[in-house]
Amino acid sequence: MAHMTQADWDAHIDAINEFHQDAFQQIITWKKLVTNLSEHGEDNQERHQDIELRGLFLYNYFRSWPTNKNHIAGEVDKESCLLYLNSKYLLDLNPNYINPNGQFNFKPVLDRFVVNGITYKASGESQTAQAGDKPILHFIILKREEINSGSSKY
Image (cartoon, rainbow, N blue to C red; front, side, top):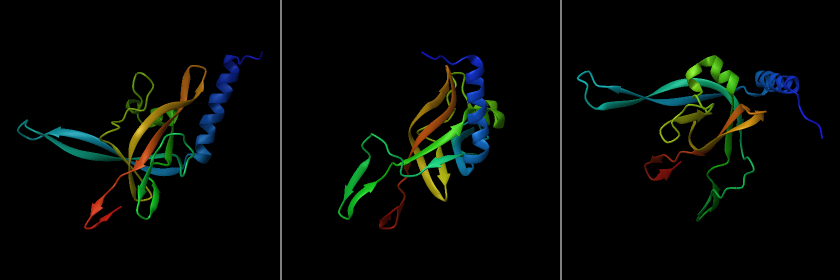
């Protein structure tokens, strides 16, 4: 049975991080929720800070969780996108983007991600592509946010 040495893991990590320079180039706007107290120290005023990230955005990703919704016009797939983010890239941008447990430090319920003008919200996330016990990538399952506009729902 073959075992990977630490040198093998280091080479694997380097290959994944170098691959980031080629494949992880989709521009994603992370709308990170930031709260501020008003000038009188009352009531939180919610606002979002736009942070530009580069990641690998996978459309129509095959998955095993049920996400389709039936409509009169047929079945609409509401949750078929994955966003892969590189841990080293996030740490290099800002060490606070990764929490002490090694997870991407975002608020899944409150933060949003904008890709090609479409707003998505997170419906799940996980570490992935581990090298030994160290996660190299994170993926976020994204669900298109429904926006009511007049009599239409986008």
